[in-house]
Length: 394
Image (cartoon, rainbow, N blue to C red; front, side, top):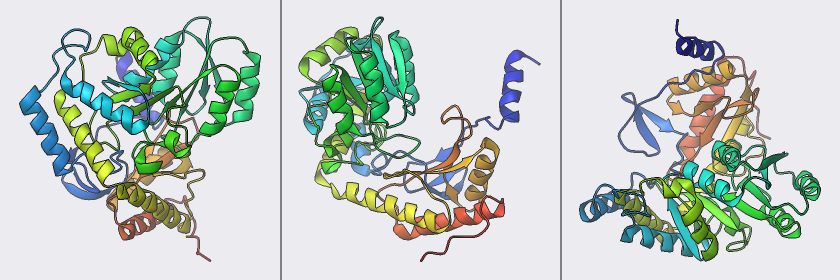
C-alpha cells in the first residue's frame, strides 16, 4: 500500500472520506442527482439565478462578443471593458469608491489579507472564519491572533495587548457553517478605537441580507465605512468570481500588491456577463431577498418542530449539529433516500465533534416542500436513533 492509499484508508476509517456527487442539469430548487430528482437544500445559489434564462443568455452573449476567456492577467492584456463595467456596478451596489475583481472568493481573501498585512503586524481573526481567511492570514506572515467567535469583548482585550502595532480585523459577515451574523458595528467601533483596519467577507451575505440584498455591512448601516468588503459572484449572484470593495487608494494598492490578482488570468467574459445580469435582476426584484428570508424562517421552524434546532442561525444557512462524522453522514444518506439533499459537513470544515447537516434554502423553494423536507429529515433522524420522538408544537 502506498502512503497515499494509506492516508485515504485513514480518512475512510475516521468517516472523513469525501466523494463527488453528480448533478445532471442546471441548479434549481430541485435537481437531478445521479438520475433522480431531489430537493436541493445545500446549494449556495440562494436567489436561484445560476439557472435563470436571463443570466444564462447574458453569459452566452458575453462569450459571443468578448470571447470565452480573457487571455491574460489584467496587468498584461486581460483588462477588458466588461471587467471595468462590473467593477463599477459592484462598487455602486456596495456603496464604495472602487471594486476589484478576483478569480474566486478564495483568491480574493488570500490576496487582500496578504497584501494589507505582513511581518511585524497583527491579524485578528474570528475562530470560525472561512478557510480562505485562515489561509490568507498564514500567507500574510503577520502574527495571527484568533478571538472567540463573535466575542467583541475578547477581541478588545487582544487589541489592547497589541496597541500601537499595525493591525487588521478579519471576519465573515455571515458565517458559512453556522448561519449567524458578525457583530459588525462593534467590530468597526473597536477597529477605529485601536487604529486597526476591518475586512468583512460578505460571501454568504450578499443577496441575502441588507436593503436590496446589499449584505451584512449594509444591514448594519456601515456601507462605505468598513475598510474592505470582499464578496463573491458565485453564490447569490449565480456566476463565478469575486471582488473586493474599498476606497480608491486601497484598490490601487491591491492592484499592485495582491498576488492572486497580479499573477492570475482575469475572469472570463461569460462569468462577467452573467454577474451583470444577476445584479440587474437583484436590483429589479428585491422581493427575492424577502422570499429567501421567509423560506429560511419556515425551514428553521419546521426543523425545530421535529426536535432539530439550528442554534444561532438567523439566515438562509440552517445547520443541524449531530456531533461525530459517521452519524452525520448516515443522516445525510437517509435523508437523501427520502429525496432531500442536504450535505453532511465534517472536519476540517468544522471543528472536531461538531459535524452537522447543513441546510441552505433558496428564494424559489416552496414553504410546503420545506416543511415536508424537515419532517422527512426528522423521520430519518429517528430511524437511526438521533431523535426519540418529534417535539409537539405548543
